[in-house]
Length: 61
Length: 462
Image 1: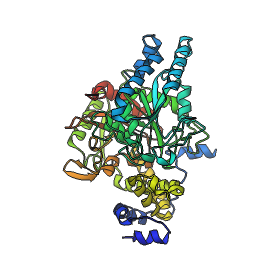
Image 2: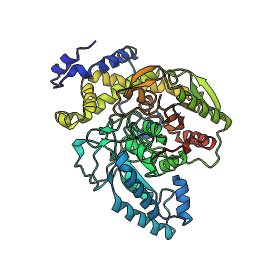
Image 3: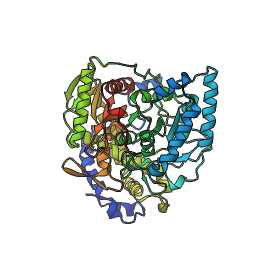
Image 4: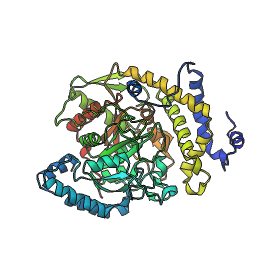
């Protein structure tokens, strides 16, 4: 598991009682990390998101 | 009375907009001390709007079914000259100089804006137990939460203070209060309703939609709101559809997917029974129920949480050194978000593309899905955990478990009442549709309302 306290300190974040808020992050990390390892290399992020792909072509036309 | 019924009565001169508004103000005066649903009351401007609506209707000027109807909006929608707090101490004195696009559209439709509604702080939670403005309470049992974050919207509609209340939904915040308060709640497709002038929680997950007493009322509200808005970069250029189902509409040959995994794995037995009754009613109305395997919804929920926490914390970063101005629950979420690396956010947005493709394949076999909206009835105020069947769960995660994935995928979804639990609290079914196919889920919802009586259940002892 990640050392959230060290990460916060390295990032200059002042988060009092950090141990109180990290258990949900540990659970999320356990669910999320295996998904990341399975991403094909050519998948781009949905940073401008549309619910239907056709909208992208509409907008670019 | 629904909006459709009130609109008919207005046009038949059986009632006036001023009478409807006066009755709404009276109801708020009587019930708000108990429920705390309305945060800012706009009595004078509402009565003036109602008088204007009466004058217009008398002259034959008719802006449609919302004309002269008392409504309210969550305090996340900017209102020109009217305080807009977003349920936060940070914005307790914020008076916008513009109206949100949704408020503009409702004004153009002639609706009478009667007030701004209580909510979970910064729309970041499901309880609406607000540390700055007080807990919003559930009309069915004031010791319980109304859900959130649009808790005031659910409470106000269920208590019949207003005919329609606008909410926002980033991880279930329209559908959860709709389910917990026994109202209808519609989250349209991402891009269908403008986000312009709405105080954001999350750039790529926020959706705007109505809570109402009937599905057709939700549909006619969407009709007034839908459309392209160049001021919102994510607004869709697709033309709006025709949303309001006709009276007695059937759903012949419609294929409704029934998830065999995830959605019914851990729910109150009363929830499962309620959704089963809705599915049976759909079959009687001509639909075909199609059992199917769902993609990994737990994985979609995990990705949605990474996106939500990253974007929300990025948005609030400039304010997070003023820690005393935040409630402890939302501050914890913002702090958690600051610990998520940028690489994880980018990879979450890459996974979102993959999950969108996987989900798209479902629509080749079904036209929509039916699921529960929440796995249980409303928890008690202040309860950190909740019993679901034979398990104890974190109340927030349980409340969002069945609704969050739809936000990541941007799909339209409708919550509608499907019965009561053992404590007499309302339960919600969820209809999920294809992108921009609000017309289908609204038609299914209307057909289910025509075939059942759950939408007529009302809170007692108010």
